[in-house]
Image 1 (cartoon, rainbow, N blue to C red):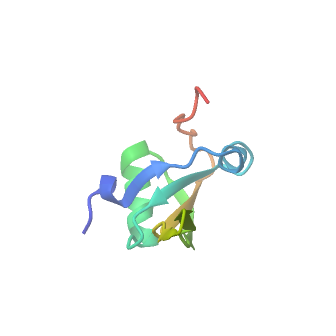
Image 2 (image 1 turned 120 degrees about the vertical axis):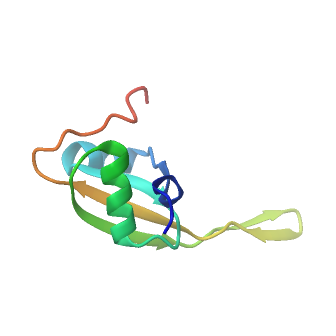
Length: 97
């Protein structure tokens, strides 16, 4: 069992993520690639003290990067969309953006 701070790496603060936060009551996080939906739900509830209604996950493949003739690859990573239950207060982690 991973600790809650090993499950959630960071919030994703993008235009799409902030729009989902405002209109759909959904938070977007980068999470541990091996974390399950249940672990993500428990981590968000423990860290932000809110009730979670739904968790959706997506695995994104790392991009290929080049420096001259050297080719490298960024690692694959996992994104989680966490929808809060009705009546829950939205946590403010992106106020100064």
